[in-house]
Length: 159
Image (cartoon, rainbow, N blue to C red; front, side, top):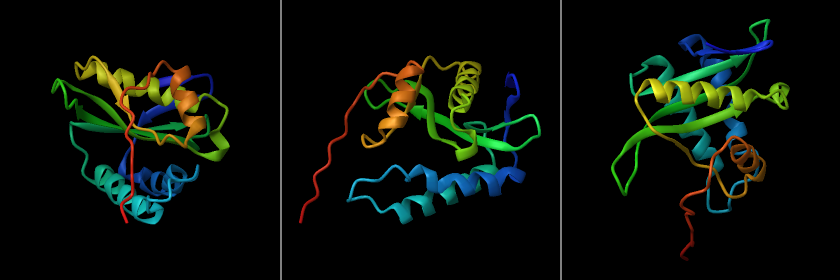
């Protein structure tokens, strides 16, 4: 369990489902590109996270950050990934969300550190994540935490 002063990070259980699902709207709160359907994205994310909490597998983990009173402040969903170009298995952060009341407390850093511990325990050399280019705040956080940008995905909508 990762700890920092009053914040601890633990493995999620099915009892955390309501909290995790309550944060799903924050995954799109920064403003999506016009070609993305935010409602559909939230529906799919909620379904996936609910399933992962109900029937966990060895290829993924969900971690919860909480304060000294066990109030949850954020979560990280990490899973097995594979690189297209070298087929190397690695850890991929599917979702990381901090509740509004947890912002500015280093919650994202603690969650990512715990995810990195999990990745090392799985024998992985690296961790990836995806972030929308419009999510400037998250991109800055990831950069401060040592992530570098790799592939930029471009999009063109056809009429």
